[in-house]
Length: 327
Image (tube, rainbow, N blue to C red; front, side, top):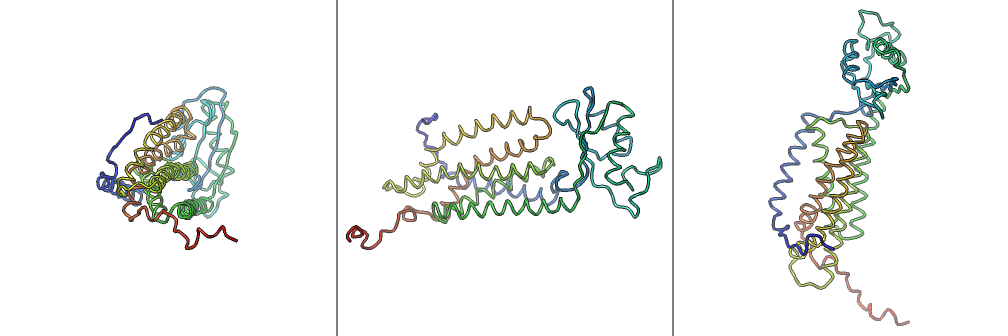
């Protein structure tokens, strides 16, 4: 049932406005990515992550001040599941000629210290203010691992897009596949651009969110494409643009309701899920908004611009096909 009734919005008639709007957003996103870059998390940059447990709840700002006074101003501190557990992320330790040099009062605590010693030094700093502090987990990610993750993550996005290109081409027609790819690339670039503009931490969960955005946006696009194909094959003698516009209107209710219910869950995750999944939920919120917009205004408009017509979807009648049943 269409909750909006029988809508008849002139969506394809606004294709020029949508094209200009999307182009502006893409340009802004690309400029932000090139100039500001991403605020890569530990997964990509490498470094040390230490989880510290306290007997009582601890204020994050107090911990930040303690670490800053000890020479760790670059440390990122956030809650880890509860107010009594905190996660401390430290950038990679600068390499020196002698990594075994002991830390003295005149030394920078992060210079000449290996990762094993670093966690102990952090614990000593924190225990000066709260003796109940103890380390529950300490991990180190090398910069080489981070480089590999960047490379493999980028390849994962490319493989996903290529697979979608093949799938949509087989299921529909090459013009539809290109329209879907245009919409997906549009969604990924703009979502990534938002992370570059606001410098939200970009880690593996965000990369997973981008892949999820591709799947979500494709699902909406496929629904619209299915309705377009049905209307093309139903024998309607309307113009191509009119059929596409009708198809988008017929699926508009489903698209909006699906996005709305998804957003309710994502906002709950963002507000109540804690710091560990904030970036993931934020990426999906932006991706769902942009993906909904692109499935309505971008994918079908791009397909229309490529010159799709009813004839492209009608199976070619095989000569003598009506005689195939004769032995």
